[in-house]
Image (tube, rainbow, N blue to C red):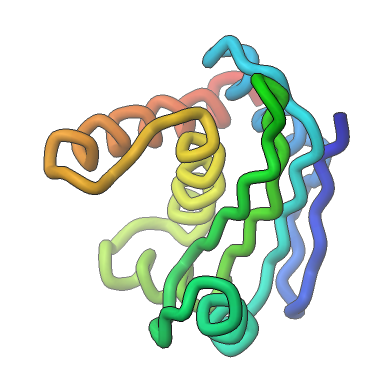
Length: 140
């Protein structure tokens, strides 16, 4: 089990250890097993190229999650555009750090089987994201 952070932009998490511990706690709470999780923090241009190349989408997005799970061992590469997170935070009038936690947990929640296609699923996803954000602040 490895949780690793990669930076393709000048952004850096303030505390890698704290974030790794939080991610492991999400897996524990959801009764799942963490395999290898790679977060790749990048800019819009980088993630747009990933979106075009692998998903045939010519749109900006805040996150793309590639699922490499085997059975109940969850593994993934999770690409996050820091540009999108900053813009979303400004548009939603929330703190950047809060929006980053939302997006980081969103990727994990997708891997754990939560979806956001329907309005009901979106509402449930938002509740779970909020739980995970609170967990970050309480646990750490």
